[in-house]
Structure formats: C-alpha cells, structure tokens
Length: 428
Image (tube, rainbow, N blue to C red; front, top):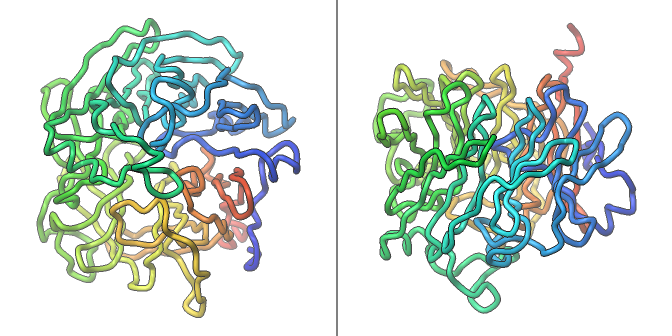
C-alpha cells in the first residue's frame, strides 16, 4: 500500500479523461461487474450528458448502452436535475448474471442488453419522483421506488444548498406533515407489466432491494428519517402476506456488543444490504451519543449482532460484503498516529453524525460473536466526498480478489480498482 497517494488502478480509457470527464460505478445496492468479472458497467459524462457504458477490462473497449443528451433527471440525490428529462443516474441497475441494464430516461423505464438492444418497459406516472431501483435475483422483476412529487418540489437554484443543491427543508418532515406516500412499483422485466404497486404512507423510500432468493420480499428504507431513525430506517415488505415490518427494533439483547450499547430509536442507521443467501442483513450507523457501529440482523432467529467502532473511527463510510461475508469500507479507519486532512464538508451533509473525511479503502473481517473487526487498509482513496458521485462506494469483485471504487482526488470522479488480497492470502 502506498501511504502518500491513491494506488488503485484507474479504469478510464484515456489519461486525458481524468481532467475532463466524470466516470463512476453504479450504486452499490447492485453490482457493477459482469458475473465473469470481465466487464464493468459505469456512468460517464464523456458525451456532455451522463450515459451508461460497459468497459471490457481485458481489451479496454467501451460500448455506450444509453443515448441521453438531456442531462440528469431530477430524483433522489440529484436534486438539481431536470423534472421529466435526462438520465436518472440513481435509477441505473445491473442484472449482472444476464448483463441487462435497467434505467429511467425522460421518465421512461428502459432495459438494455450488452449488445445495445433497448426496450421501453413502462412510464413513470406523473407527479412522482424516483430513486435507486433494484432487480430480483431471477431477473424477472424490477422494483422502482417512487414518491409523491411534492416530496422534492422546490427550486434548487434559490432554495437548494451545497454542491448537490439539496432542499433546505426537512424532506421527511414534509412527507409527514403533508401526508405524502411512497410506492413500491414492481414491473415484469419481459413485458413491462406493472405486477403490483404497494403504497406506503408517510414514507420517503430511496433504497429498495429484493431478497436474493425470494422476490416476494423487498427491503426498503425511510430516508433521512426526521425522528426515530434507529428503528424507522430499515423495513421489509412481504408481498405474499401484504405486511410491512421493521428490521431494527429497540432492545438490549444484542450479541457481540462488547460495550453494552442498547438499540434505541435515537440511533442513526443507514446503508442496509442483504447477505448472499438472504439469511441476514448488515447495516451501519451510530449509537445515540455514542460511537459508530456496524450491525447484522438474522431473519430466522430475529437476533442482532452489533459491533461498536473505536471512538476515533468517526469518519463516515459505507460497508458492503463479498460472497464470503467479508466487508469492505471506505471510511472510519485511521492509523493511531495519523492526523486527518481537513476537508470541506459544507456539502452533501445528511443527518448522519459523522464527517465525510475518510481516506482509506479497507478490507474488514468481522467476528460477529466476539464483537471484533479486523481492519486491513488496502489503499487510500483520498476522495473529497463532495456530492454523491464522489462517494467511493467500494464493491468487491465476484471472486473477492479485488475492490472497485470511485474517487475524486483531483478535478473529476474516476473509477479505480485495488487488489483485495492480503499478506495472509499471499502466504497460503
């Protein structure tokens, strides 16, 4: 690992792109890599507007899968986008086994194959905004979360704040006060039929994820919860029973919690994701008036494991998993002797209590039962964290041998890759 600089391999085709164009991975709730690991799917603005491209990691050849010339569609995270026009950057989702990409452009829901064949599946209803979509494990269902458009009804030029021009008002607060709803809209990926639409009142949904093995179960969230984030954030919808239930509840019976923190409504919880077999959900956040933590919930036993991080691990980050249950993180870690660089954090500040100034991509090996985490820094990403696109959002390759991530350490956002092998692996 090179301590002084970012040492991941950059995945742009021309070094000059580093000065001109932004290229980023798809959102971490889906993979950006083909099942064989030979292609990476990304969003690039090389044409002046964002488009989805696929890059062959062997030959370097790139193919455009979308044809967008109208900028960015207004949606969650991209608050200053154009209503009804442009590419929904948050909507792009890859079915990595079949290499089919789903996305929203000009309020139309598309699917496109690696060959470039495109098909319109459906249209987003009027007066709704969308967010991060998800494809079922069998590739047959697409979930598009939608919210009443009033949720993001504002002028980003005069009422927006920060780099991403997010609303100055409390969005979840408006949802509660004006009795707005979100909708789990599930479409047939072959013919675009709306299979069902589940309305969830008083809710702002931005993340949805099908259970990996059971597409009748959908995990969803309450974004930027204005109250009780510790128990409102993560929910599951059981379509068979037409029931909703929360994942994290208040309580003391947390396994592996060596510091004795209770689960409380006042905690901050975020970035949930399924394990490969759907038996558990991991998440991260922070205890109310306490340290950061990473947690796991097991559906069958309804048990929780939560591991509190050291007090000085206070740099916001994301946790994702490989197929073996190892974690990777883009924040929190620091060497004891390090003094972190002072970074501008006036933009992209959500309700989380931690600053966005993490610098490392770290492999993290959890021992849930004894409440310990082994941190193995792989490289510095040195991203400035300013805006959603500059969040590293690291993901493992399907083989688990490398990690892909975003970084803007200079003028533009680029995609990098670093080996996930440690000295222990190399000695075997």
